[in-house]
Length: 239
Length: 309
Ligand SMILES: Nc1ncnc2c1ncn2[C@@H]1O[C@H](COP(=O)(O)OP(=O)(O)OP(=O)(O)O)[C@@H](O)[C@H]1O
Ligand SMILES: [Mg+2]
Image (cartoon, rainbow over all chains, first blue to last red; front, side, top):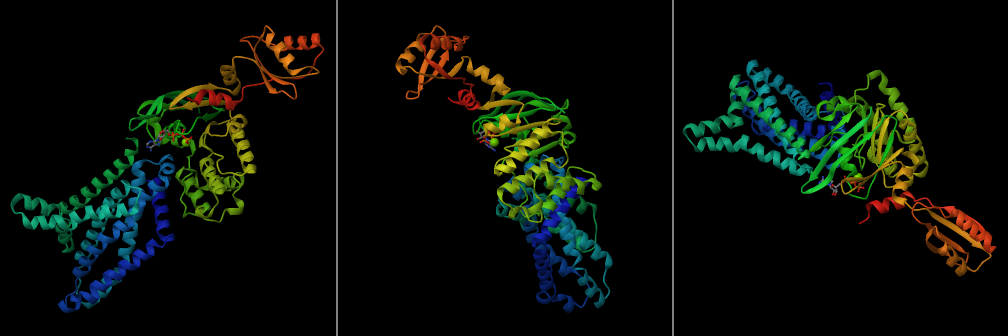
């Protein structure tokens, strides 16, 4: 755990040193603020205190921003060869993946923490369902964890950051939109399977304030699967 | 801790980069890897440092198997990879701090170790720069510093002096000699004088196989076989001297090295010495023998002999 944290710390520092962190924070807050308050002004229209539209916007912004955060993480080590230096230290493949995952997740959590003023603003308008807000944020974190894992896997299979970004978006699209579309096209069991695979199914139920073990299992198993795949692809250097 | 490499093999595609290599390095020994480009030196080092796993065979460090105890064993290894990959965007001091932490050096010892490495590797003048701003030689020094920061019992250095200035080369070689007294060191190089200056033993690798293993002396004996002398004989006609030398019973081959200056190269017959015969010949003919130098086979020649074709 200590090793994982040392790696995470270095990555976080490098996010802030390279200004990536600030750019992402500003863009993320700007986007979600813009769409939530100015373009999608339903908060005031509906006249009801809810963060539904904010969660909807964050859901999309994270989908785009996370691959930009993860693309560098392993691909750049592959390109520069520093992966060799890291893995010949007392660091396992799993600790390496874990540390990078943690760094990206912490950055996302920091970004989400900066949106708490939104919550306070909205809460001042009317009676806010605190449970729903908590679930919504938890949903965003779980969703981020999944996309970070996918992004790490994408970053591990290449030494080119742009390729890593594109692969992450490509895989992400299935969970974000394509499975949902397929779920609408098919009916019966096939439709249900696609519906279960779609992130939106699980995210929406959480942002409505319901925590179901089914949703938790969905997010966690996707996350573990993608992290495992990233770990395996690091081990591929031996093939 | 000693290193025992047993029959390791690594294939890239269809090419065997390392082909059933075995050797042993004792504690307190500096082993030099020599070999032409693409021989498999780097690949062997990557397996010893557990970056790559051998497809066959195993590596034992201090008697423990690399396949089983890699995480424990890696703590005792300092590694300078070929091309010296580093995080360019990091300041030197942050990078050394990171290396020290990840190698598990106790928190209170870290400043002292970093200070020591800055001194030993001559980083003081540049220590506040980012790695990406350093010249190649200074980057190499940072690479060496991270390899030695935890005072490892085993050092694996892939071309350690590449890019260093002559002063620093001398320093680093001295340091390697010094460290080599107590630790186990493997280094690779293309500079033959470096091997002679730093290594107790030489391993020549060619096409993934070991073609020679021994000290510089044992290798030259192995290759040489026949005695070779450089002689200079004055006060006589060069052609006449040439003929007379050729007729000596212990001599197999004579060659001019410089006809004007009466210089010759004399090769003795196998297992024979011709120096007495040459001396007596000069005495009887009234020639003056002004030089007689036994030629040792140089490492260059051994290297060429074993790795050409
Ligand atoms: N990642 C790789 N993929 C494919 N082949 C490789 C790879 N790395 C090394 N090789 C091949 O393995 C062989 C051994 O390479 P290695 O780098 O071990 O040689 P070396 O002895 O270190 O050479 P040099 O003196 O040039 O550093 C070479 O033929 C090389 O082409
Ligand atoms: Mg090499």
